[in-house]
Length: 312
Image 1 (cartoon, rainbow, N blue to C red):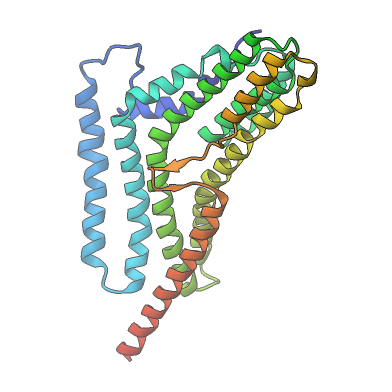
Image 2 (image 1 turned 90 degrees about the vertical axis):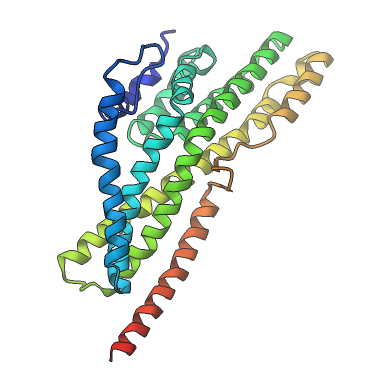
C-alpha cells in the first residue's frame, strides 16, 4: 500500500518556520546566511518589540484597567517568542519527530486502516495537534491488536514494537511540545482572566465589547483544544489492552496466551501529556483553570471597586 505522507500536513507550518529563520531540514546543510538572517528577523524585530512592550506595560500600568488592557497583549506576544526559543533549542528533536512519521509501523497496512487514518487526518488538517496524531497511532494499534489472526510470536513482537515506536514518538513530542503547552496554558489562563475583567467594564453596545468577546472566545478555544485532545489521546491509549483482550485468543496456544497477558500488562499504563513536567494536560485541568480564572477575576473586580472608592 502507498504510504501516507504525514509530513505534507505540515508544509505550511514548516514554510512559516523557515521564513522566520527557525527551521532547517536535518538532511540539509545549514546555509551560511542562516544565522545572520535569523538574527535580523528575531534579534532586531521580534524580540526587541516584545521587550519594549513589556517595558511599556510595566511603566504605564497606573490602574487595574490599564494593567489588564496591556497584560493580555504582552502575554500573547511573549508566548510566540517563547515558542520560537523552544523550537530553536530543540531543532534536532523536531526533525526526529518528522522522521519518525515515515516509520513503517506508523503507516496504514490495508484499506480498513487507511479508512481510520483518513477519518482522523480530515480533522487533523484543520486542528494540527500532535496528541491527535498519537491518538491515531493508538487507533491503528488497537485495530491491529483486535484483528490478530495467526497468533504467532512474530505477531506479538510486532505489536510490542509498534507500541514501543508510539512511546518513543510520544517521548519526543512531550519533550518539545510539553514546554510549549506549559507556557501556552499559563499565558492563556492569565489572558482569560484579564480579558474577562475588561469585558465586565466595557459598554455592552460598543465595538470594544464585541472585539473583547471574540478575543475571549479565541482564548477559550486556545485553552480548551490541547486539554481536550490530550484527554482523547489518553483515552485511546487505554483501548489497546482492551483490544488485545478482544481478539480470539482462546483459540491460541498456551505460550501465546502468556505472551498476550504480558503485553496487556505492559500497555495498561495510559499516556498522559505533561506540561514541562509540572502538571498533566486534560479536560479536568481545563475546568480547574476556568474556576481559578473566575477567582482571580473576582479579585480584580474588588481591586477596581476599592480604587473607585478611594478616588471618590
